[in-house]
Structure formats: C-alpha cells, structure tokens
Length: 163
Image (cartoon, rainbow, N blue to C red; front, side, top):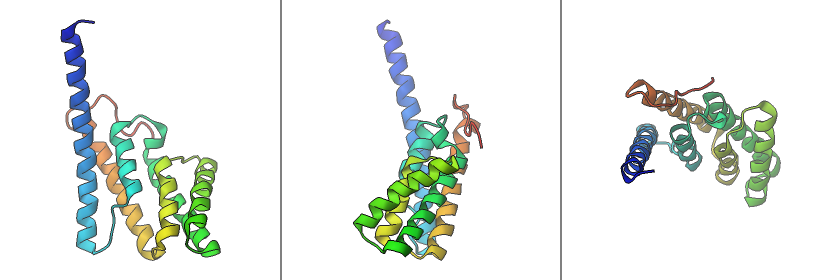
C-alpha cells in the first residue's frame, strides 16, 4: 500500500470518527437539554454507551432500535423488580445487571449498555413513573439521531439495518 493510500485511509477513518462522534455528542447534548428543561437527569452513562454503538457501529444487531429501546426499557424494569425484592445496594445491583442480560437474551433484544441501566436503577432508586418515561424519551432521541447521518451526507451504513 502506498503512502498516499494510507493517508487517504487514515483521513477517511478520521472523517468517519469525527462524524460519528459529532452525531453522538449532538444526541447526548439534546438529552442534557431535555433534562435541564424538565429539571430531571435524562443523560445517564449507559445512554452514552448506546449513542456510541448507534453512531460507531450502526450495522451491529445490538445497535438497532428494537435492541436499544427494548433492551434499555426491559433492563430498567428488571432493575425495578430487583429493587422491589432485594432493596438498594451493590449486591442487588450486581444481580440486576446479570438478570437484565438474561431477560434481554430471552426477549431477543440484547443491548449491552442496558445492563448498566438495571444497575443504576438499583443503586439510585429512581421513581419508576419518572424514570421510565424519560428513559423511553431518551432512547427515542438516540434512535432519531441515528437516522440522521445516512440521510444527510450518505453515511455508508444505513441505520437502522432492521427495526
């Protein structure tokens, strides 16, 4: 491979990385803005990981909307179930993370960042009537931002590959 083609490949990768990072950052900034407007935290760490998957690996099955939304909401529900049965704490949080994976695999919606959502629910004990709708809204924002790159500028991988 020549120096020119190496530079072109590096330039292409850098462009893709900057573009993916910009769209992910945009989605996360919207989540922060929604949180500020509602006086509620909307951006939680697992959603940053979800945004990274959607924009960094849009063709992976775990990045697809069904997995992102379904995995996050199912894992949160598992977290609330464990919280109700075992109470808050690190031991229960570890159990919730494992059970969330089990539930996602059984439901065919694996999304690895969502296991952390179950852990957060058990450790933070948020109110379900507030947390779940905000989580649903946040995942919808991530999916909507996932739709943008291919539609403006022809990203090589169309998102979603499957709903």
